[in-house]
Length: 76
Image (cartoon, rainbow, N blue to C red; front, top):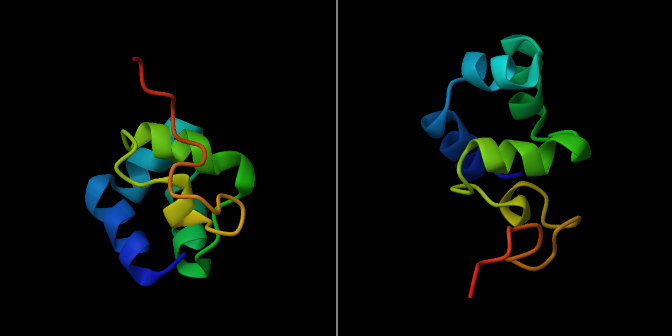
């Protein structure tokens, strides 16, 4: 995860709010962002919390190689 994505996440929601949503400390969220590594099981829920303004591909392009991977299906 690059610095732009980290900044985007931080601009959309505070570490405290993200932590509250997951039932973890804001320090744990800060550690994710400092390391640039969000636990795989947290990626999709985080994207959902952020209203898909950050995509799984942006967070982990190796696990989600296509830009639309992990995104919810759009209703036709």
